[in-house]
Amino acid sequence: MKKTFLALLGIVLLTGFPSPAPAVETTEIPLVAHLRERALPLATEADLDPLLARAHGARLILLGDGSHGSYDFYRVRAHISQRLIAEQDIAFIAVEGDWASTAEVDRYVRHLPGAAASAAEALRAFNRWPDWVWKNSEFERLVEWLHRFNGERPPERRVALYGMDLLGFPDSLQKLIDHPATTEAGSSFRQCLAPYLDNPLTYPVALAQGATDCTPELAALRARVAASDDHDGDLAAQLHVVENAEAYYRAMATSSASAWNRRVAHFAETLERLLDRHGPAARGLVWAHNTHVGDARLSAMAGQGMQSLGELLRTRFGTESTLLVGSATYTGSVLSGRDWGAPVATLPVPPAMEGSFEDLMHRAGHAVAYWLFAPGDRHDGPLAAPCGLRAIGVVYQPEFDARDNYLATILPGRFDAFIFIDRTRALEIPPSPSEKERP
Image 1: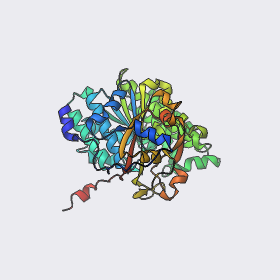
Image 2 (image 1 turned 90 degrees about the vertical axis):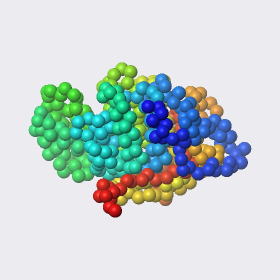
Image 3 (image 1 turned 45 degrees about the horizontal axis):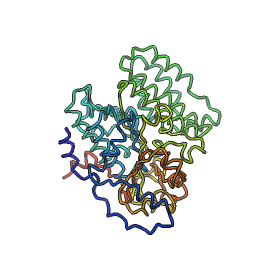
């Protein structure tokens, strides 16, 4: 398996990156010199060994991205994931995608009954905006790799793929409606939510204006699931998504921070359920945005009353059992929408704001590098001072980058390791099946 793995990936870890930027005279900025001295290269297979060694004791390894639309972040996370799966005992990958949609991809990944014929076909299950976050060429390649890898393993040892998000809750609700034990209660709940299903953001608006919420119908659905013969736990899993989604949108009526925290808590609860499902020694990989992966207590998020997945997992499992890995870029391009639901486009990523971590790493002169942090780094030395760190989401307006996209961060506290790619490229959306068939 190791030989096959290397043959598939080649010897070079990352390809297509520019030559390192020339070093800038930095004697007046001690942090730049410190970053240059501490940087680890990221160009060959062996360069990843220190990071993989650090991951050995962790039950959950969180791999963050600085944007959901950059090819290079997906590529490096895929490579780290493939090596960890091939060389260490990993039970599952959980992504910041919807539970029901990702379950269709998991069927293909684990060769389960009713699976699609290809990764591209399985990924069609992601059918709501921003579907390109998972329906892209790089993630498709990872799904195909997992399918091949699992094909050489017995069913009980195949690596699973799960979604841990709740934004696609209508699909989970439909699964409950389709089940005979919960059809009536699920239909009643959907009827209550019917005015809001096309745009769930109208639910908190209506509640703020005095509308009645749907919690009684949800309680009835919960009772039906509890009374059902749910041997495989599928109904409970779908209910978990639906319950937390209703609470998430309801919280928006009073506090955006409370709503954010409800969604993050759902991520953490889902991961705990997955660890329980796979057994006391199970280990998992998590793909999510930096704002979820990093520990919010070491950033400006804490002052806004916002928690993060990394924070909750460190609290639940301890720092030795969690590894939080972030990533960032100085400039390049990104796949994103200018507004929620807007057409996706390739947008420029302007050079990072002066004085930000991305700017300081750029000045250190590495095209691609990473850092491993020690516990003392968050308290002493140049890295203990907060600097801005950029966060690009699925909605991005480059002209307001400096105003909207930076969070003050103590980097070695917020993350255990950090990957820097000086120039990134936008994700590629693969052609549709009809386009592939054209001569």
